[in-house]
Length: 136
Image (cartoon, rainbow, N blue to C red; front, top):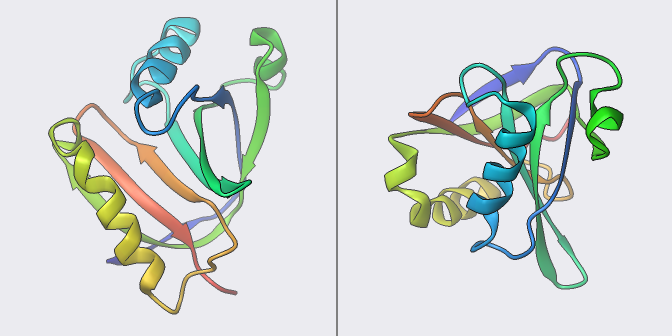
């Protein structure tokens, strides 16, 4: 595990997957079709947290211009600046079944803030980062 710092908040937009984890791929395909940008040309994120005893997962894209969320009629979110504990996953598309185990390991670290959502940052078609915000 390594530490990573987002120096500024990141404005993102998107929508919840219709199911977790089965609906994640479909949600991103819809989002990518809408924006027209693949991973690597735009930052994509997955955000998950517990709500009513189940995991709610959001497929998100970073805004390229102010008001883009409204243009597509999607919900707007903010990924908070700050320090995150991370694990990079290369060739992630072949390792999707192991992502939950990586987050389970990160959450066990006493440095993370367990009230914050788990974040996946799809940096490219090959690299994805698992992140959880650290305590202040």
